[in-house]
Each structure stands twice: as structure tokens, then as C-alpha cells.
Amino acid sequence: KPFSLKRRARLPSHEPPPSVTPAPLAAMVKYSREAKNGSKSCKAMGVDLRVHYKNTYETARAIKGMSLRTAQQYLEDVCEKKRCVPFRKYTGCIGRTPQAKEFKMSQGRWPVKSAKILLGLLRNAESNAEFKNLDTDNLTITHIQVSMAQQGRRRT
Image (cartoon, rainbow, N blue to C red; front, side, top):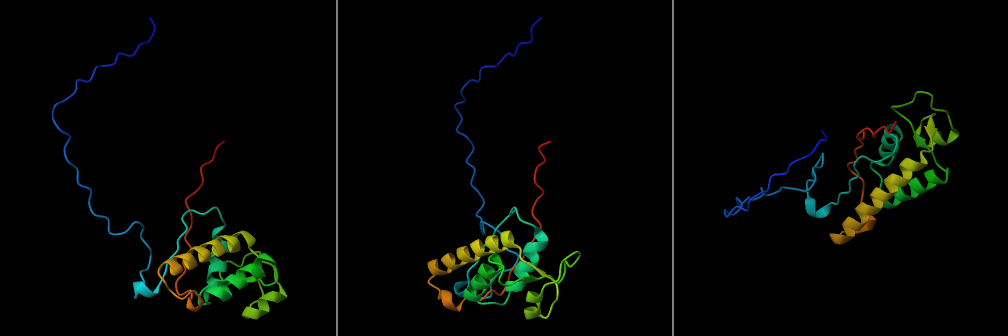
């Protein structure tokens, strides 16, 4: 006997659907830290980026405290391998380079993909600052955080 599905006919109900009022949202996304003065700061965020966590952590730590322009120039130099990113925490099997003497370290690398991702985030933060009519030449990076991304789906 072949398998068959029987569908029930839905009769239209004359009752109106219950009115659902959505709860007011406080913010679209949650940041780990809020600025003391929101009108004089700007934010940018990337979620679950396909980039190595440890390389991005060290690159972000290297640009913290820099002004926006110097951070952008530094990351462009990292992409061209003129300056290195010092590895301070994750130092296992990291080679030594004389470029790390700039940071009083001996170990460093040139994580190009992480530098390009962070350059994109800085560019986004700069456009957010322009939208808020802030002076982009006086921006400094006061808070930067890197968290591990969600694991990618295996296909085999």
C-alpha cells in the first residue's frame, strides 16, 4: 500500500489575530563596554570573523592606545611587512625578528589577514565618527576587544 499524506482543510476563523506588541529594544547589539560620553565616541564591531583569534588578539593589543591615523598607518605597514606585530601572550613557536625591538620584544609576526580585518573595522569606526560629526583626526583607540568566533560547520 503506497504511503499518502492527508491534509486537513483549515477553515478561516473570524476572530482577529491577537495583537502582539513587541517589547521595546534597548539596543540592537550589546557591546562589552559602553563609553562614558556617548556623544564624543564612536564604535565598530565585527562578529564571528573568519580570522585567527590569537593573531587578531595580538594585533589588536598592538594598536590599543594609538590614534586612528597612526593605527591605520601601522596596520598598512604590517600588511607590507615593514613593521611587525609583537607577540606577548601567545608566544609558542613564534619566530624572532629584529623588527620587534621597536616594542622591546624579540618575537613578532606579520598577520596580514588580521591587519586587513582590523583596518576594515577602523574604517567603519571612522565613518561612524563622521556620521556623528566628530573630528576624525583626534580619535584614539581606548577600548578594543577580541573574542573567539563560533566554530565553523564541518561539511564532511
